[in-house]
Image (cartoon, rainbow, N blue to C red):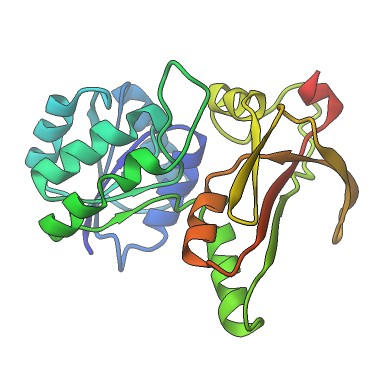
Length: 260
């Protein structure tokens, strides 16, 4: 793989951009595109200021507009489009990838703008289209989802005959000394914690009121933290691909200042 186009220039995109320039034997050509080109240019400058030598192109694009995306893809001709924009824009970017023959990757599944609700059904509906086009679409390739799925797959392959109970726990032990500080897009983060919780048991999905189920969990090298049961999209994929799972839950820590 040589030519990569990344859509997005926020916090997650910044981390990804630095990883890409650190692996130039794989990613030999790189473009960053976002709604505001100046934000892309600022990101490129920060990369160069750290001493990384790579010719990085930038572009302006409205990721809600399929025609704009298609024009950019047809001009740059990327082998892979990395979608680090907003989850609302997953489907338009996937449509443009199909139209232009580009492989696709994202870190979070689609959710509609007018409803705090996400699930994989919208994107899984594209599976046959990508297969028929000879293209690859990798969904949820961040940390959670992403690394959490890889850890589960590794455990299933190397440590267990089968998995029946799965709890994914996400503890943010950092402290920015601020009342409200998110690890990613604040709007998406707020939508995530205000929507209903969801967990899996014996073939059924059980819905809960937002953050209504919580308990202290003790984390290695961190200690006890109050942890809240939430819906997280990798549960959908994991119970589908590991049918021996009878119960699956996702827990995340939050400080009281953050929640109140």
